[in-house]
Length: 111
Image (cartoon, rainbow, N blue to C red; front, side, top):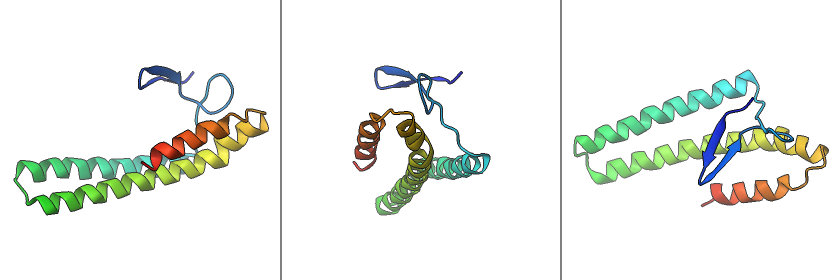
């Protein structure tokens, strides 16, 4: 059974397919995503340190840009795998509303 995840004011069961949606990433993909997120976590801690040390604002802003770029990379990778697995599976199951869900998600990622 998947985890209950709160998104905004809505709680959902996070999975890919029918009633309970759960992602099904390969171990290689999951490891890659986790490694990237661990690096980003370190970058964010580094940002905090820069602020604590009163580092010049432009230097901090450049580091923030780097973190945002890294997060975008994780988002792109996850989106690619989502489209190639979850979305295709749900379309094959006749759940065409997944396209609307995907478009909403892409719009959020592009903000």
